[in-house]
Amino acid sequence: MKRKRLLSILTISALVCFMAFAGIALSAETLILASTTSTDNTGLFGYIHPDFTKKTGITVYVIAVGTGKALEIAKNGDADVVMVHARELEDKFIADGYGVNRKDVMYNDFVIIGPKDDPAGIKGMKSPAEALKKIAESDVVFVSRGDKSGTHVKELDIWKLAGVDPQGQKWYIETGRGMAETLIMINDIEKAYTLCDRATYNSFTADGKIDFPILVEGDPILFNPYGVIAVNPKTYPHVNYDGAMKYINWITSKEVQKMIGNFKDKNGNPLFIPDAK
Image (cartoon, rainbow, N blue to C red; front, side):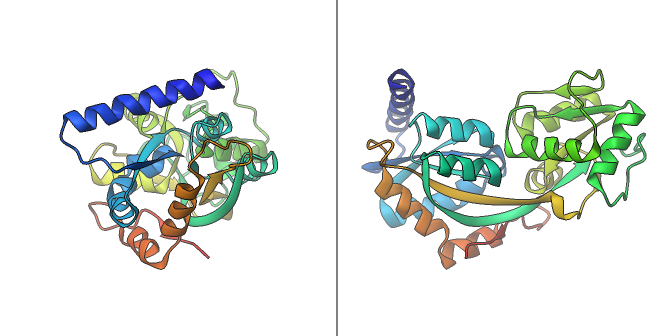
């Protein structure tokens, strides 16, 4: 664990040196945020974080990975705060003593996307589980992130409801990568389906990076809430707990919640719905 923490410190130090060389202003205090790829790929953090730095003097360094990896980084004491979207994993993270003070931040939903000609014939189906079952029976390609992210966890939940074990099937491809890389892969394969968070889908569609329609949406199981959690200072005394709590209070404030609600893609579609209580 000490070695991993050292590597993180060296990585951050290298980034700080680069920023200084490039003439980018640095604040005296830093905060390491481990978060999901969707929050970073969509540009949300680039949109809202300058406000946090301006108000607090704290620079936020984002480690954008899947939810599972983000929580693992925090479990190793290599982050100060996490923002993720897999409530069962979040609750276990807190119950095991790694995190404290979880707050709701925002939500969107997941969608199943695929080829325009829809060879599996799932377009308009109300049940995501039945849609995945039909994909399996049609022997068409399904591309999974396979990275223990919040999206991957949700996908596995739906496969379980469908009564299908996709592991090892020739039509089931696991990228082990983030949502952006997975979308690029299905775009290259052309005749493939995947589960995607709506924010990344809207962002990539608006930018012209993919041209796949939404085929299944709207079921309650596709609800996708995001939460922010401070790393427990009793478990890791070295973390920036004060900075983490400033961040949590800031991102759940009315002002920043309004900023999140105003964050849209090039087509004017909101990417996240603010949800702080």
